[in-house]
Amino acid sequence: MSKSLVIDDLYFVLNRSNKRKTVGITIDRGGELIVNAPYDCPLEIIEQIALEKRFWIYTKLAEKELLSQNQSEKEFVNGEGFYYLGRSYRLLLISTKSPTPLRLYQGRFMLRSNEQDHARKHFIHWYTQHAELWLQRWVYLFSPRLSVAPSIIKIRDLGFRWGSCGSDGNLYFHWLTILLPPRIIEYIIVHELVHLHESHHNEQFWKYIERVLPDFGLRKQWLAENGSRFVV
Image (cartoon, rainbow, N blue to C red; front, side):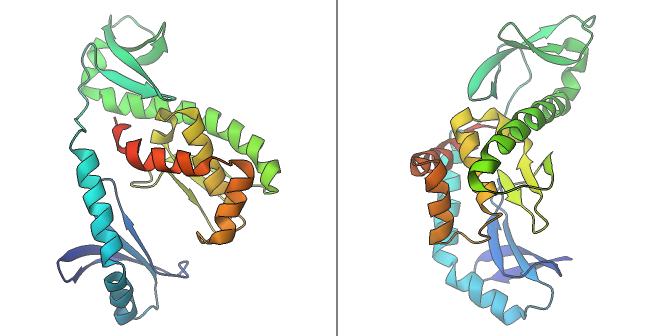
């Protein structure tokens, strides 16, 4: 159930759910403010929490504005670069006789010229397929080190989030994750696996991550500063 909520000069989308236990505020990739709250949480409590987090919200909005200044829309034309596992590959439009609409071959993304109007759909499909294989492998490699066993691993569009851990033990990752460098993807994977131990970002949560990735702080900072560049 969603509705709008205006607090001072901030406009929020309010989502209520019976599954939600706490109030959380997030900012999606486009800068939209989202409040997720328990279904029975009084509106006054939600407004109070939002007011208390105003400084954090303004800071994050400013960071997104700064990062987006250097971000340009992708054009599906010859020579445009598209990331995969942190490396940029140039796009080449090819003959319509190719058996697949999109593939990565000999250091190039090759797109059938008659599929140019549907290029983004094909890229999302390609990234999703490869993300499923890559992420599942590394989730199962890291899981024993954290003594956890995720139920299901799913790839989908998560909006502003790189990953999410459900209360049922399911892990979700944004298909855009596969564009990032492997060491950054590892941080996202470990981050979500640790949520199977700790639901909140408390001191114990970060200690769990540090045991597996001692340099997690550098990876976390890199993601915050560079993550917005990895778009399609």
